[in-house]
Image 1 (tube, helix red, strand yellow):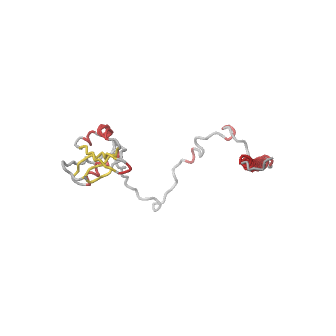
Image 2 (cartoon, rainbow, N blue to C red):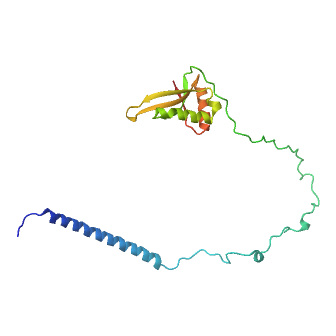
Image 3 (cartoon, rainbow, N blue to C red):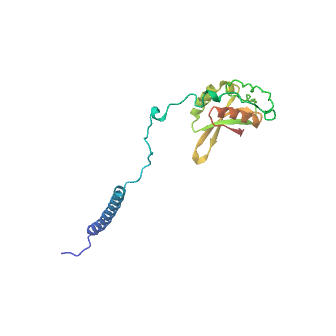
Length: 197
């Protein structure tokens, strides 16, 4: 018989040792779960919330709703009133007339400038081919807003993040007009922010 080292035998011993630990762990978990179930079902009956009477009561048992529970005698004029206890008459003012609810109030249209220094950035896309469909979709949703707007696309190389095409509408003479345009765009559910050219 050879007394040489056989790595396969030692690997088997390591596996069987870990397998035994796993079986013991599973047995402990099963015993704990069984104890929990035993406690749950062997405890005395827990008290339940109950009403002192029947749960549902028919209207005939509870009594019908009476139209005039006070009676006709209770609605008579008071016998006498003191002059000091009566309040002075108050002139009734009619409630203010409510204006009919119409469509939501839309702010004034922004003013575009031919060579303005500000634009409204609507999106940043990774594909230049996607710029025109986005512009057509936005301008079809608000044709009055985009009627005088010019499409301005800026190519931005962001290094490892890639090249983006900034879709911008413009041009505006000042930041306030661009912000007004962005407010109208946000009402449509589209992101927008003001940027300088």
